[in-house]
Image 1: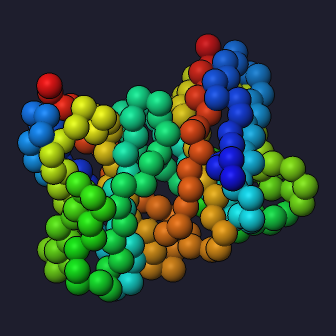
Image 2: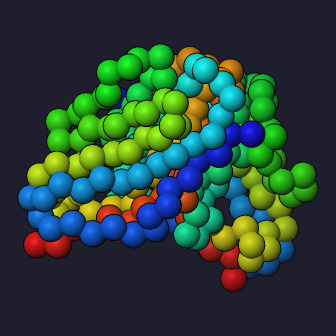
Length: 114
Length: 114
């Protein structure tokens, strides 16, 4: 079964600085997707970024980028120029391999200090 | 497009009562997924439905929980004889096609069991 591990329960960053959130996963599939979701205090699940496993190029969305290392099964999220509004829980998720389910990690709570 | 609508946002029940959570998918989406988020945890898959059909209920507890997605109307997640351990946030997501890589999440329904 697929598993997703986020080893950092909490992280903090100064406003305007850069922070990297870690995620590793385990799968025997070759075709899958990886996601980072943001959950602010409102509890809404917001898709931040998505990566297709067959693409070697790392996905980027404005200040958010990923470092996808397929062989190492690592999928970290980098947030550049951190803003106060980035403060939230961040969840890494795995999907695909013919399954309809997303498998989520336990999350990392990000605090942004002014 | 109003997005995925869940109601109620907050529901309080006493032990032994029934809880009904509703989810209206995005317009044009015929695939609905339910996830549960326990305190301090990531989301966990419960069930995947298409109109009038349960496709995958491998994440549903064997007793007291049921889900439906009728031809007309919202999808319903029903919990009978609630217990304190059912207290959680329940998220619905919808998709225009099968596959967990294009999900849009609702804002969740928070169930509190007294």
